[in-house]
Image (cartoon, one colour):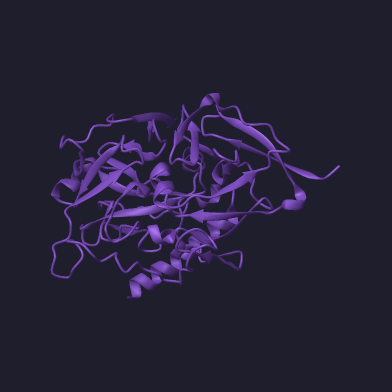
Length: 357
């Protein structure tokens, strides 16, 4: 009998669990970071990764606890109806099932990242600039589908990222930033920091054991209080809530958020559902397409999923946020330690080059 490895996929709340086996002869399985617009707005993260579940060795998952979402005429995505965790994507024509890597109980020897695809959708390279190599393996880079499109060089930028009314040197920067999920059931806008952004109150700085607490300062504001702070997190809750190995948050006061109809921010609007991931904190996600929307644990201040932002300059939204590059929050909780270690090193290198520019 062929040797196999057992893996379990689980959502944050534990309602959706799927044990499956993989032939060891096929390991490690390649995983590509997808940066396409659809993946970004259905998940809320900057890029997604998956591995294929071999159908000859495994029964189909129990989809009864999951919400399906047809993100195209080809793909159906499944997320937990209770906590919002993205679990699977199924190709309808072939029946091929892929599982999100962030929900796996182990990845060592199972998952091997090999490159980035659909970078053309990012306009600025997105998170690929932070993940150039993992465990010494350079990551391939493609503007579209891997090996079927033009290769993207390091530091690639779209020629169109500086087109439009907000892009020329003479034009005034846009004063509103649109954020939305894939189905547009959740849609809102963010305004530039102002004096009202200081009213978020004494918000605790949630991070890992080595965090620096910028006490007595509005730590959520950067660049002389003209931008919001943004950072990455690999904690267990963020990983399982999203379904992917790391997430990216922008810290935005509720005073800077306006709903699509022009009304002030409120915590329940559109197609939002919430799940209390720990006492006093809730995670909001779209109940239709499953996109993570925000983490809510501070009065007056939200962690907004960066993957939902439609910034003209690119998905990193550098005209609106300043990225914290010294560390990945809660990196010690990562299942895929080599990936998060590479992300942390890549962030430091990228941040150093940014600060020296």
